[in-house]
Each structure stands twice: as structure tokens, then as C-alpha cells.
Image 1: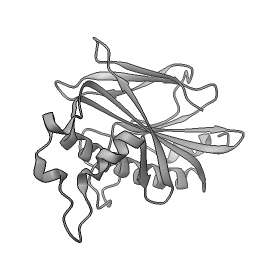
Image 2: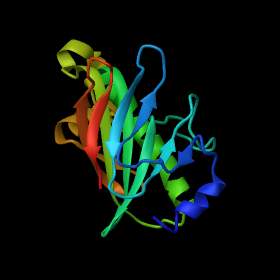
Image 3: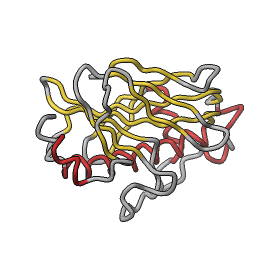
Image 4: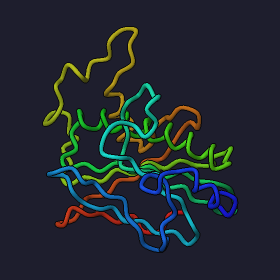
Length: 194
């Protein structure tokens, strides 16, 4: 991480920075109705890649979606990427959007990490927080979305990702998914990450 920190001067501090205190920091959802914070901790310096309020951090990405932010950490085994999305009510339809947001932030983060001199990411973990879990398809999904169309990917194939707690991302492959409910203040805490 020591080699990355001097390169932070290439970025806008509102979007890419190293927290002053890595032992307790947060990413925040600021949209009305979904406001809240998700806390993380790292025993070592880390770098936060945070989205703005509109569009992807990189305007040239086709995906056009992005999550709240990502965190780059390092340990003895190498660099690790942690991607966060926060929701109020998590339905099947919202989960399909979350999958795209994870992908958009992943691609943005890969571009940022390359500029930081990081050429290999050992692991990627996606984090989802929610106030209300409504993932039961019978309660929340339009049943037409559950159908797989011939010759087209199933956008709600993401239901499998929810159950298996894994997602396939471009460039790095399989990532784990960690889930947490938001508390009465709309906050969540994942504690220490590697």
C-alpha cells in the first residue's frame, strides 16, 4: 500500500482517498429515504473509492451503474477489493440492479487500482446492506422477470447469487457476497476487513 498512497495525488480527494483513521471509517448513502452509513475497519492503511451522486465514476463505462463505494486493502497475500451497495428495501428487482451496481463499481475500481500501480487483485468481496429483506420472489418480483428467455441472460439469475453468496465479475471472476441488516439508524457495521 505504501507504493499506492503517493499516487493518490492523481485523484480528486472526494472520490479516491485514504481514511485518516482506518480502524473505523464509513461509506455513506446520502439519497433521501435511504440515508445511512456502513462502517468498516482495517488494521492497515486502505484506499476508499467513492461514487458521486450521479453516474459512474468513469464516464466511459458502458454499464452506467455504480454502487456507494469500494475499499482497496492489502495484506501478506496481496491486494483485496471490497465493494459496497446500500438499499432500504431489497426486492428481487432491486437485487438485479445491485448486481449491475457491483459490476460498475468493480470496473471503476479496477481502472483506479491500475492507476495506483496495482496489477493484481487477489480477492473481491461485495457487501450489501438493507433495511428490509424482501427477496422472497413470491412477494416482490414480477414473475415474468423470473423466466429465462432463449438466447438472453437471465437478469434475475442474480437470485442464484443471493442464495450462493457469490457473484461473477468481469476481469477477476468469482467474488463473495456478505450481507447485513441496517439498524434503527439505517447504519450497518462489517467490522474488520483484510
